[in-house]
Amino acid sequence: MDQQQPTIPALPQVGYGTNPYIAPPIGGPPHPQLASYHQQLQAFWGNQMREVEQAQDFKTHSLPLARIKKIMKADEDVKMISAEAPVVFAKACEMFILELTLRSWIHTEENKRRTLQKNDIAAAIGRTDIFDFLVDIVPRDEFKDEGLVIPRAAGAVPFMGPGDNVPSYYYVAQQAPNMAAYAPPTQQMRSKAPAPPHGSS
Image 1 (cartoon, one colour):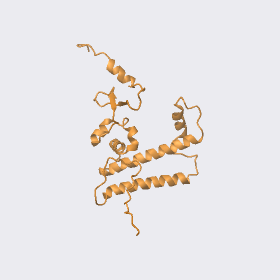
Image 2 (cartoon, one colour; image 1 turned 90 degrees about the horizontal axis):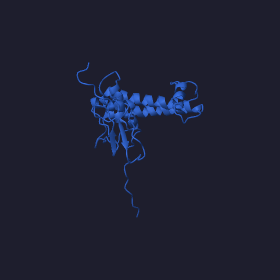
Image 3 (tube, helix red, strand yellow; image 1 turned 30 degrees about the horizontal axis):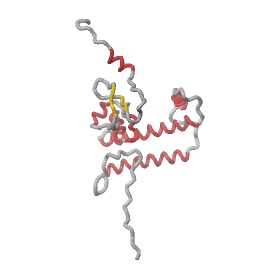
Image 4 (cartoon, helix red, strand yellow; image 1 turned 45 degrees about the vertical axis):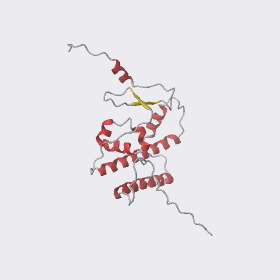
């Protein structure tokens, strides 16, 4: 006798850069607007892949290659740069800017606005795991305005934070036991500066 094995339904594929902490809707179809945004991102990356595969002109770029080379040479360990490296960096930077802009624009449309604002960029960064490295660059006020919570790594110990008691640097002891703590010189000086004497103007 042939026994049929039960079929396991295929799990939906999680798109590139999605936030795994947002639970999908239980039962029923996904929100139509959410599906539209997902389609926009899929179309964006499909277009980017086609553009890369069909690229034949490597001499014109959206970003200046000289500036990219200059940034690359800022690293003291970099001695020489091949001709192809800035071209790849230029395209990668362009794709990064385009995706962040698209995700920011989606947030703008969610709020029924027609002008992209810096809080839209902050929201795009906060919603997308691949942009976590930007969390410390974006002003914290933007995340507070949107009600976004920025999770930190477990075991992260804050130190030398700014005056609003929100630490700007973290030291993860489990990952880097020999790493020294770093605080910008301006903050070090601010914390050591003597208080002005009373009564002086």
